[in-house]
Length: 151
Image (cartoon, rainbow, N blue to C red; front, side):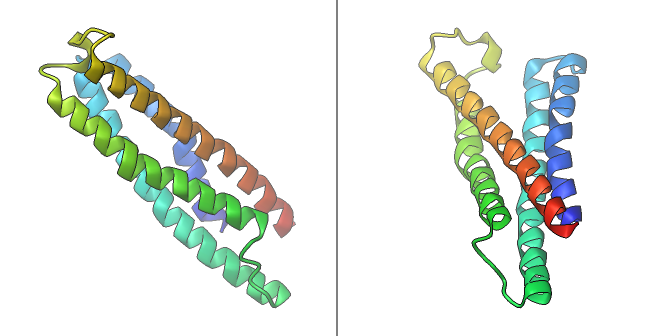
């Protein structure tokens, strides 16, 4: 349980470092955005697998220690919410951002801020950032709840 949670939350904590480094080091923002987008996809798949492993092992742990699986325990509900936010980002927001990026000639930064495509892209980026922050906060709560229940 803890390993899957550590992998997921650790990735969420490290991801902004990767993003900031990509934008600071790579020669164009377009290239940095491509690296960050690919990294975000990997992070999302890590989260999806981690959620499945966490839920399976936590339900099994509950069954072995208390005789019941407690599927609606707080940590299970929060992990399902984390998973839902991750799935929304991976399969809802990111594909729409990619489509918009493909419809814009050249780099996204060359498009005026008041352009409808740019405004949509920026709004989706903001939602993506909010969702990742929400997943991280929920993950920290799950870490606390899980570690407290194992002590």
